[in-house]
Length: 277
Image (cartoon, rainbow, N blue to C red; front, side):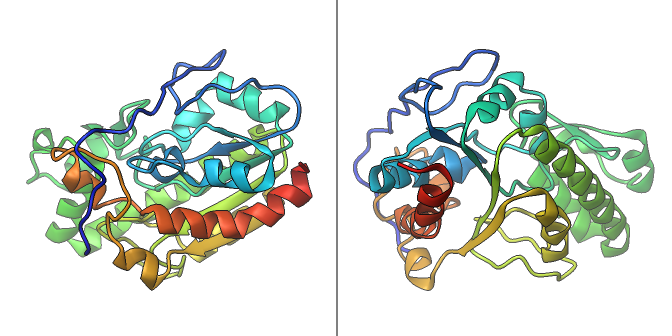
């Protein structure tokens, strides 16, 4: 992967908050009035290491106010449990929801941090019984824990994966019903959402989300937009990103500026049509 950064200084994300929310979003803070589109999603929507993430690009191109409610590593629960975001989306003319990772969500096998959803907190008694030989205290991140469980036993892990996929679909249906707005569901990844049983990759991925899972959600949204980063975008690696030397490893695990432009290309005309300028 190509490696390039734009200096050692980190980005200033201008953190801001909105009424009713405990989260700190990427700024600058916007007034939630008039016509605007709201954007919910994880690290890509937030625009970690990206000077102009796709919501900002869309606003510049269309003239539609785009309010970024992206939250790094966000799972479904972080939005379900945030009344401020739900209130803000109810006032929006359109809400774009980036498909979140399946794994970053509390379920009957394990719990995650309520806001930092990639952080593993505790295994349930059921999971400890299934994997009696595992010391779960060694895990701090969900991805690491699940990868280790899969390495140990594909058979047992298939049970875990199926359970969290079922829980994710149910939780997503609930979230979509609570978002009182026209909704565009956005797939943003380095792969297409296919139905292989083991859909996961080291980076750029809503882990374990399949096409069938997305199709179950389709009746609840106005549109489903799939953007798979092009070979050109992926080949650029961290080119054009802003991060410090300490942040360099993390920067290699997010999609770069070109992928954000590709998302803006796909969503821009739809935003104009649904919201207006």
